[in-house]
Length: 473
Image (cartoon, rainbow, N blue to C red; front, top):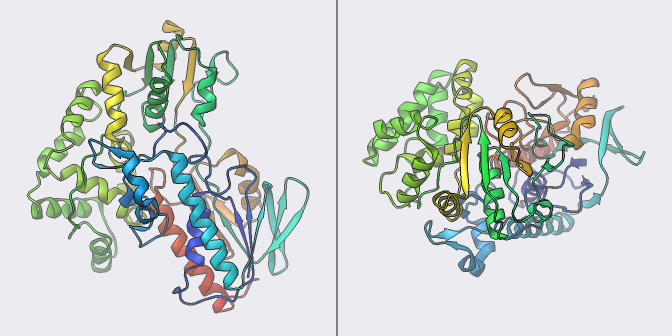
């Protein structure tokens, strides 16, 4: 096997770690693995490169493991360092993203060493892949420096899409098109300037917290159509679910040949009943997400970090552990129902950590931060802030700018198909996609558990294909 891995971020780390698993069966005969990554932040990708310490991982350690099936892998690596990064309200470590990048780097280096011991030749090629084509029984990859590399299999691990510019502000004075890394972006922001942040999701939260940490003295406005902030993580409750699980979803599928949103709702209802939860109260909270005053809701959720009610905890856990699997089984009509509630679903599934929520609450109470839902263009014209920071997240399954040429080439040559809902669907058994670009994924960007699960399945498929000597026609 000559494997080409396009992209060297978290998805590639998960894939290499899964390929190196000595217990995996079947095992393929070792060959060559080339990882193509042009950026200077190998294994970290865009989200986990060097940055300010207040730019934190927004999820607890239990759902941060890059190794599928080993929820303690990350926590074990973190070890005693966890004590230096405890969120006092959450009671769990919330580490800088750069430190999580060290974890990814450590995992990748261990995987590369293990693969080398098994006989694999692993090489990192620091150049962008621009195209692909067939070369007889193999695939040929073209790179930006004019070289060509031949492979038996290709796995795209290119990460998430690029930040969109929905208001056409690129190139205007004072506009920051991409806030990351915040350490560099905020160097361009005068300390007393008024700042408009477009968006109100986790990226917008990062921007506000980073501005506060650097002593910014001007006013900050969060501008978005809805003004909906991410929910706030609650202290976890140590109990495994019994109903709303991957096994429960698989049983539904086996019994009925399909999985509906109503059936998943019944599993959630059964889970809450089993744990003395209030299904109706959870439903009301979800229904009013986009209509409740965001400042009032933030204050309520900060006060509820220790609330014993389990409804939101169960739903958030299921979104990461069960959501990606269940999504693939839902009929399109039910997927459309969920897409209509994208803002609420994203706020629930991607909460902010309490330490960041506390910073926002302090700034809101002091009158330094405002949340302005409505017409963003009109607000920008009326306020004319000195700095405008784009914190709009790319939609799920969007194509990163650096991968557009390659994805277009795969589609043109029939090796892949662009899915109407976004992403790339492989049209050849030698092509695989791991991460957010994978077509058919959830309407919410892939989480670390979802990426790790995809990587595990892909590693199994690669081993099996080589072990069975699948014809490469």
